[in-house]
Image (tube, rainbow, N blue to C red; front, side, top):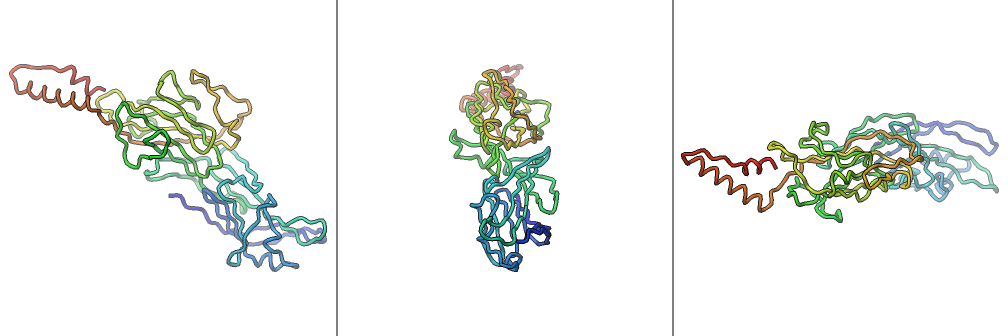
Length: 345
């Protein structure tokens, strides 16, 4: 389970007096960088001790419509769900996405008073290792503080399987599927204001994504429909959800009974028009010249998915087991190529 990061820091802020003289003042603030909220708390006495006192109504974020609240001797400013609201600026490097905003005083051409400018930021790592929701760890990241006024937060990404094409009935136990059943897969990211893109998806007969036996069905963000006509990518690179459907299958070999799914994912902070892959009918991607940002990818996995034999298979298996049992009791050797075929499905 992810915990929000609460950090109290001392911050040097710039103030401008009515005489236009700039000076610095140190305050204590608490920044909360959660997966669905950025929040800053500053003791109200810092503002009320000014001459004249600065009221909560005198302050706003980059967007003048975004004001704070006064609660328990604190001035609180929050950005919830969509971190790019309230004029938040977003930037990224190879490892992190940073959201920056500023608490500032109202501008007036009629009166002058002390101008406030308090910049804060939350830095969320792109480097993550994700497992399915019932795994040991949902996300594992290296948490570091980059500067006094930038705190770290976490993204949560998970892969889930559903029983229906509407993605309403989620599997909460190990799925048992026949070869006629469809697998409905959703990869979801929290917070939901960014865009997730599946880069490559493949399956293995064991938990290890690097297993020697692999079956790849999404490559370079495009479905390999020539390889598997049952595959349908419903959405990819358009929102915080990526979804696809594929028919259940089994790896060839008597020892392979389970299926594990893996996808490498990217966080994209551009518009859906840039993040959505442009694929041909043959599963090849047409590169968008505007898509110049290259973010690290990590692997999300789900498994095991177990194969359930349908009624005909079970009947054939019982028949051949009985056939071999009777043959063993007889005096002559009997071979059953059909039995071998059953176990090699």
